[in-house]
Image (tube, rainbow, N blue to C red; front, side, top):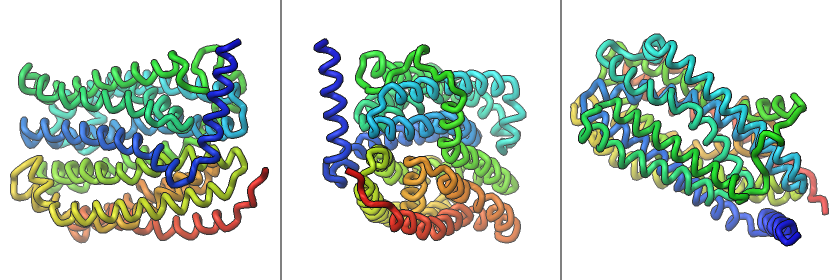
Amino acid sequence: MKTAENLIDAERAQYIKMTETPISRLILTLGFPTTVTMLITNIYNMADSYFASQISLGAGGATGIVFGIMSIIQAFGFMFGHGAGSFISRLLGAKDTKKASEYASTGFFASIFVGIAITVLGITFLKPLMLLLGSTETILPHAMDYGICIFLAAPAMTASCVLNNILRYEGRAALAMIGLTFGGILNIALDPLFIFALGLDIFGAGLATAISQYISFAILFSMFLRNKTQSKISFKYISREFKTLVNIVVTGLPSLARQGLNSVSTMVLNAAAKPFGDAAIAAMGYVARTSHFIFSAGLGIGQGFQPVSAFNYGAKKYSRVKKGTLFTWAFGTVLLGSLAVICFIFAPQIISLFRKEAQVIEIGGEALRFYCIALIFFATSVVATMLFQSIGKSGPALLLSCLQSGLIFIPTCTVLSHFLGVRGIEISQPIAYTLTSLVSLPMMLLFLKNLPPDEE
């Protein structure tokens, strides 16, 4: 009986925290652990690129090629994670813990099933996939060695995305940070050990990533086994209603579209860069890793905003949804703008950390500066997309995700690379980010204007 009373008290305390804590403090409190997590994740992605680049130019290019594969795997994980998490947060806001557990369990086990399927298909068609992603003959052997490890880690990667997002949407971002941060630090430590000390080269980088992914998964899953969460994960909670899975997929579809189109965009980018040689492919890969590292600061704060908007929307406290949106938008714009200025100034020096070839530094440095200019607009589209997805407005979220992740970039890159060469490749993604923000702004402001008054 005492345990039941403690659980009720914990749920009541969590409800009060999510609906009464001042908005700015709550978002920053939840966003800080997520930002740290994303920074660490991006650091170990960059570490893979850095250590691989020390092997050879081809090995460095391989990490850029396989980056598209990782995006595909994570796309499915984020689909189930964001889809389930959005419902979980709103259900907890409405005080329906049992239904929240059904969404948690259904999303989790579905992600593992899909992860296993990706592993089987990926290993079976490994070589054709690497060529499809834009690998040259010199990069191909390295990409295959690295890629097979990533495919073996697919179940852990998809399931970890779900666990991480459930924790975030419950307002327990600090617990999510523990598992992913430990895995990231472990990856960074294992890279030089496997690559250089054990002489495994690029395969060692992939093996380090695979091991760290499974360790992260184990730590995240232990949070649920130790009853650190309100929603539970168990076979008995898997929903018998097909509608539950459909709801998860539909709500999470913007995440799948975003990550999936990112992968297609990577393929288009590598194909466009291929005529200009391994240096162009490697340079754009380094730019992608660096820009994702910078984006993670804004995305981390945005992901702190998601559970706040979802929970309060479910609790019918619409004024807090509006305040949270405007605060996150302003804070993200200032933060990313400041980072953009620093990165713009030191762009060539940042690229030179990976490789010293003049062509790599020239292409990468110029491209990174174009990305920095677009960073000023990036927060607008991100906040709008996260707002619509967290409250279950999957239509607008899907549209903005597609625009941001490839719907504009793919034709732009294809056309501009033909007429402007490398310069066309460099400016295509920044153009896509800017145009998406111009579409996102009126959609977001109109929605906030039409929010109803709070219900007591």
